[in-house]
Image 1 (tube, helix red, strand yellow):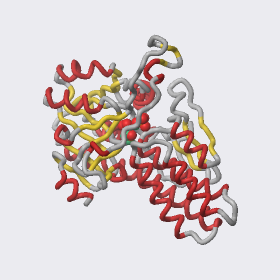
Image 2 (cartoon, helix red, strand yellow):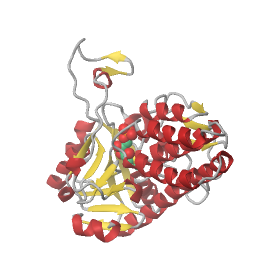
Image 3 (cartoon, protein in one colour):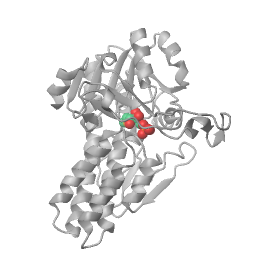
Image 4 (tube, helix red, strand yellow):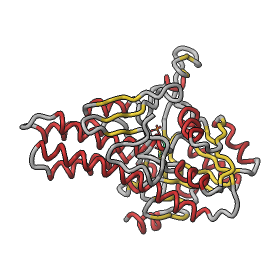
Length: 356
Ligand code: MRU
């Protein structure tokens, strides 16, 4: 598997896993629907293909969605007509924005790309400027992840190695490289402060089983996979000191939308006196929303619950409810770590101090 994207310096973080490669004329995505069975790369040459890959979750994870969409905008300029290029790229931005609703990184990246577009004088200018802007977004995300891992480690003030529990996949596969919550796990491991990471399997899409277990094992990081329902029993054993998760959108009061099941983990963590940390770049913060109640929560097809790997596990015609994110109230969160700094016991004032 190729380990680097042209134009993006992965050396600093030294990630083993890369899920997004920019070829200049096309975008390559490691198809996350096929992992861990197969490492299959999709080559996409237009914005519509990128929007489809996001919708179908060939690429997923809030930062990776934003980065891919940015490359999608760059591809739209390449494929556009010399006369109607600006209108075509604007349409592509709208198309990409309609792909998934919850991860604000998508809209953040598209707004930034739209700003660059408005400054372009010709299609040729747009082709080069939009590609540069997308590479910058990609590169900045990787740098933010490395910075967040350092900040998180300081904030944890660990005196000896401990075990942690995580949910979903927040690693190199979900980001521009290295990872958010899994970036912290990588850092803990490299500093010999990690005994073990428990990875929730993360029903129904199994990001934990299929992606996190795969990604961490490749790096030799001790990972134990558990059923989501085992998290309470694992915390009760006392070995886990931190739950570390990522985010898809953080509201101005510190409420956090993340993969379905995160809220339940936060309740469990509080009961067991396990600390709860959210790690996300500032591109995940949405100060325009007062609280988590305002965050749009994606609902996906019930078949994702009624089937497993294409095999039906529930009776035909079962009615299923499949919200794929939930909102963890800020008062259940001990730390929000971003590359701009750490918000302790998040609430409106602390959030405004860093992001206002
Ligand atoms: O539905 P997904 O797989 O895109 O959801 C991903 C998550 O919920 C992640 O925890 C979140 O995006 C943070 S990734 C660094």
